[in-house]
Image 1 (cartoon, protein in one colour):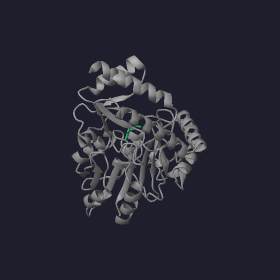
Image 2 (cartoon, rainbow, N blue to C red):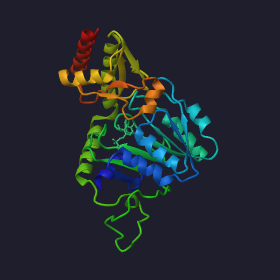
Image 3 (tube, rainbow, N blue to C red):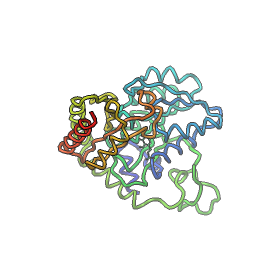
Image 4 (cartoon, helix red, strand yellow):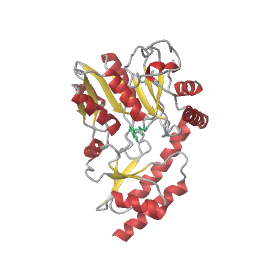
Length: 334
Ligand SMILES: Cc1ncc(COP(=O)(O)O)c(C=O)c1O
């Protein structure tokens, strides 16, 4: 399928058949975790994970998989040295995101992956917030399992995503059934991608995903990133000038991806988000962003934060409108 080839090229995947399409990143993460881990295994993860990782790990923990969590600092940065310390002998897998959906913090996976490979620890990356913004190469980053949604920065439709599985790694399927080939056999094929793809595929969605990735290739990942960074810098600058604003994350640095979390003193983020939406037509996400442990890490429990995530199709004017709106709401409040 052409989409598989395009996605493989984009992520430095040599053999496109190692890509199993899924409905979203959550399914890809579940496939990777439940497909590999067994009772008695030990997994290391971080305090910055989305519930798409936290909850399957909890379910696996109930089945006898031991979990260790590495604490990030208050900007959401996970120190590679802390990972190395936590990955004691017998660790089967390290699973972590590349970029936080709460603070936008980018983790040093290019350093962590090769270290894991050397230690014989499987390295699984949740790239939900980085795929389509930051370059990802499964070979140089030594990624064994890469979970990606099609519907975020890869610009595909909802209902698309995939799991990359490194050659030589055999996963138990989540779903068993018809694969369109090997029909005479009552057992699930061993061949990839059929092993992990049962039932009719979301072909229309995958055509859209292919178009999305080709668009990014045509524009250039560096231009996408540069545009988003420019908007983010303007947003951060503007917010810093508003009374009572508290910003979170590695603010505008090279370690800062698309998402910016902030709060205004004594202002419920849900109310601020509601007013931005209703009164100004500005979309944002408020609360805990399906990542309560990340909010615990940066000290924003129980209310969470308000998050704005400028993307490639946003403009400077839109950032200025958002800043004016926040200023106006804050002025009336105080
Ligand atoms: C870091 C992270 N991981 C996983 C997910 C889950 O992605 P999906 O909705 O494609 O299942 C998200 C969604 O926002 C996310 O931000």
